[in-house]
Structures are given as structure tokens and as C-alpha cells.
Amino acid sequence: MFVPIYDYNPLRYYKTAWATRALIVLNVAIFLFFQSGIFIADGMKLAAITFGITPDSIDKDIPILPGYRFIPPEITFVTYMFLHGGWIHLLGNMLFLWVFGDNVEDAMGRFRFIAFYVLCGVAGGLAHYLSMPGSTMPLVGASGAVAGIIAAYLVLHPHVKVWVLALGRIPVKLRAMWLLGFWALLQIGSVLLDFDSPISWWAHVGGLAMGALLIVVLRRPGVPLFDRDLPAPGAS
Image 1 (cartoon, helix red, strand yellow):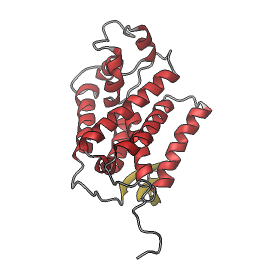
Image 2 (cartoon, one colour):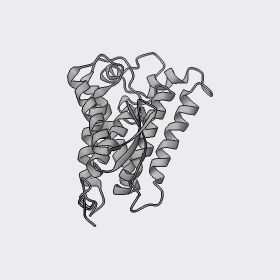
Image 3 (cartoon, one colour):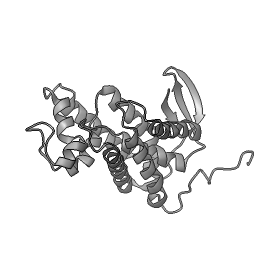
Image 4 (spheres, helix red, strand yellow):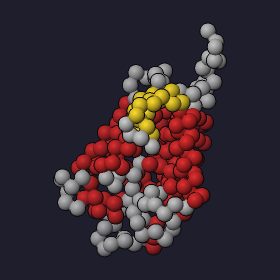
């Protein structure tokens, strides 16, 4: 697989994408203090069951385990996206958010970007819930929100070059349209083929769809789509 590490895409409106950085810090802090087990024993299980999306529990409006439900189940469509199933899960999502989130934030503005992030996460959670209404497994992770950022970046900057590690070790430079387009098609194909996997492909697809739609209406006035402001090949 390909691991993104850097994109050739300077910001136009901000010097620093503070909202993107704040989201990364928030996700890492929540995992460290509430899920890692360093400060709260059995925190991973407690957080997932209490604040993750459990479709069967939502339908019945009862906790999946006695004593584990402290908030209305509808609120879990927001809280789930700030939890993760492990360090690899967390670091993978935060890496994509770091590489691609700053330019999406730059294209929208900070407050609209935060709303965008949450709405894409909610869309991913709803897609998971509707596709697996009887599931008793809690869904956690920022993947739906990050998928929305990937879709927005793809709509904004398909021709930007991105450095990636192929197979986790070989540095390769690819256009975003090939890298992120392949990733998006993989999520859609996984839904269609119904792979037996612990990954919620529908959450990714829900986030992708919402991100592609919202970037059109939430971007700043005058921000072009599909890199239309780039000079044509060979132009001076």
C-alpha cells in the first residue's frame, strides 16, 4: 500500500492550518488519556462501548453492556470519530489528516473546515449504521471524517504531486488523482465486493460522498475546483 508523507501544495490564505493541528492534538490527547490504558484501566473497551456507534444499541436505546451508556446514543455519531482502536489506527488517520487537511482547511476557512470535518464523520457513522443496523460491534475512528478530507482534496487538487512510501519503504512521487483516486475506488470496491473485514468500508464511503458534496458549497468564493487555476502544461 501507499503511505502519504508530503504534498507539494503551499497554503494560499493561511501560514499555518491551526484547525487541522488542533484536531490532530485532540485525537491524540483523547487516545492517550482515555484509551491507551496509561491513565484509565480498560479504557479502550470503556470508551468504545460508551462513546462508539453500536447500531443494535441505538435501535434498542439500551447499552450493549449494563452500566456502559452515559450519553444519548445519537451523540455517539459525533463522539465515535474522536476515538480509535489502537495506535496504528490513530497514526494512520492522523497522517492523512496532516498531509491533506491543511489545504482543505485553507480552501474553506477554519470554522467551516471544523464543521466539514464533523459532518463528514457523521455521514460516515450514518452510512455504517444504515448498512449494519443489527451490529453489536462498536464503531470508532476518524476514518469517515478523514475520507471526507480525501474526497475534498481530490476535488480541489487532483494534479498536485504527493510523496508516498510504496510498500511502506520506497519513496515515490504521484499525482493526487492517482493516489487518492485509487484509495477512493478501493473503498467503493470493498463495499460492492462485501469483503469480510473488521473495517467499516461503508463509513469510508459515507465520508467520501459527503466530502465531495460539501467542498463544492463550503469552499471560499473564488477557490477553483480540479486545479483549474494551474497553468496548462508547457505554459510559461
